[in-house]
Image (cartoon, rainbow over all chains, first blue to last red; front, side, top):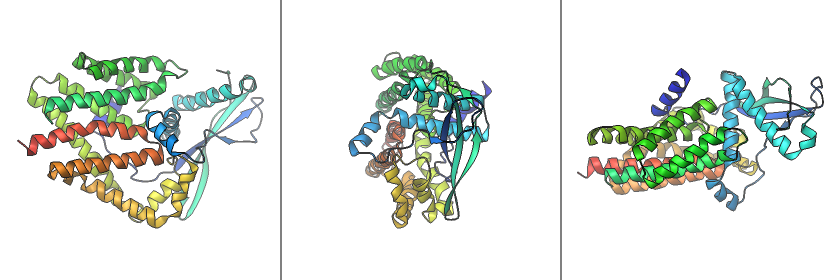
Length: 144
Length: 228
């Protein structure tokens, strides 16, 4: 309850510090494993952004933009994992990867295991670098 | 715009924004859908102006449950603005006198002004924003660009330098637009176009609709202060 009160107070007395600094930027990458002991050899970015968007697509997204807004929520979860790790943030990411995988490869998912990692991109002088900052534990996919 | 009209218009715009947010969750696999179906129904009543005080209060309580569900705002700044508008409307309805109602609604207008001014201030004190590097970083490696093609803007540092200063100057000068009604309307139009650009470039569509929702409060406050 204290945390909820703190959250609502931060909305009623907002700081409005949008884009004050461009912080390291997280990417979520996942791998599907055959067993809980397998070593990951292929990491894939979760929901990479589209190569390009048409004007019509941009217009549509003004009214209907669920995946993009969910991706922004997942960025918040990734940032929360780094600042104050909670199971809830980890589960939010895991659940969405599982749901999307099971929707596209149902038979493949049921006996598989999932692991994700957070890769943060940042600028050092003029170079863009990346660093793996978090590796989740391996979890069995339930095909949900 | 008088107080009642401004309050009513804000309610209608908020109802639209909340329905738009909620629909995105209705097809969710988890039981969060029930929270958002309830919010959609309450937003419908709000749009129709039925039992507004109770509906706003119920939506405010529901907003706490949604905050708890996601352990924070679902979409950062835009959700914070939704909460601010909703709670200001709720308090405005609950206040016993017109003067107190006006103070609460005026607070929303002041926060709208501050949302631009403070955003401009925190940028201009940062050397990376002053030399255009920050906006280049946004396009080059941040999660914000809505498509990969948009990352190519990072290759135009002069353009981004000009864009950075345009944004900072506009945000810092925004409070001065309240000098006359004409300048205020121009200022709000430019601000809406700014949010539209952010929605197209960065996929931040919720910001566009929810910031527009707060505009009637500022139009009313301007009329209240300068035209009486």
